Image (cartoon, rainbow, N blue to C red; front, side):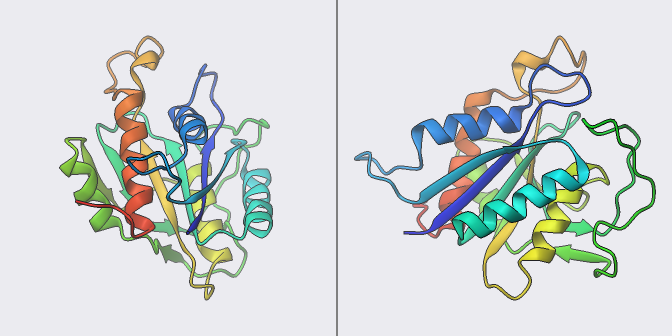
Length: 210
């Protein structure tokens, strides 16, 4: 049975919620199970702070603690209409707004001396196809931004170089409950997002049945 670490983020920039946190909590409660209710993976979950260095240090600690085979990190991306499977992380922190510790970083590497970029090691094309087959909007993305989401993505891929573990980052849309806070921005129901990430985990673990 594969061991999976799934993370989301706390709310940030004054928002009352973060869909990535809600997805993680929902899947932590139900687990990833088959039709008879038997666990399909050993699932570990965590909600990370939206703080540059603290988030990546906590993630590395969780990896050391749980020794996962697969690591999937989630983050909110307002303005997106689909589950976005990120393909590449860049070695750059360049924030237009402060993190939750009030810190703003401009034009700094995530890892000093690290490679310019790292690609996901998740089977993202297969994940997109499986999620779309469930009738849920999904697609590939080649930009994870330069805020804490990209910071985590790059730090994750850098930390797991040569380990054979599969890892990557998925951006999720706003949920319907955030519509009043983000007027005019697209949303997707939490139920759909939870199902999408459930399917994504099953694909990554090699247990998804089409």
